[in-house]
Image (tube, rainbow, N blue to C red; front, top):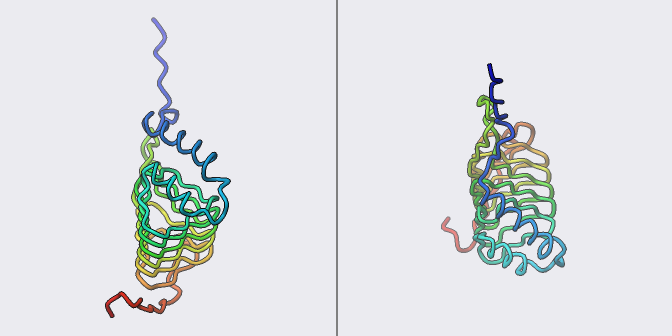
Length: 191
């Protein structure tokens, strides 16, 4: 009797298409050559490179050279967004950053996980949305599928495993409400 054919290990199968992997490799090269070592004040230059790779960026976005963006084509930023050095935007699914929101140093927006109950352990990606004026503080983590409300703050090293309500300050692991944040409407906002 001939030996049975070996069963393929589902853990070794790629999670994403060859086209996606090629695009990310091209982006990694462009990031290294054109973004990573660009001078600190060259925000317009970095925004232009990101746009070439499909990012949607409003005016006055400040994305620093040390920020790591996994898939620029899945990054949508409104105006005046700030993404600091060391921030990681892991976005197999779209991540949308509202007007004037800030992602601080070493913060991590994690747009995917794996299905731990499936023997193939496939990647499961979900979009993340940060509302206008939201702030993800240093070393804080936002999980897949989370919506951060307008003006919400996720404090230092906090971990958002559930949606964050508008104009509320959160902290801890998992993040819990600490207090309300005072809302100061801008001149162009309706009271």
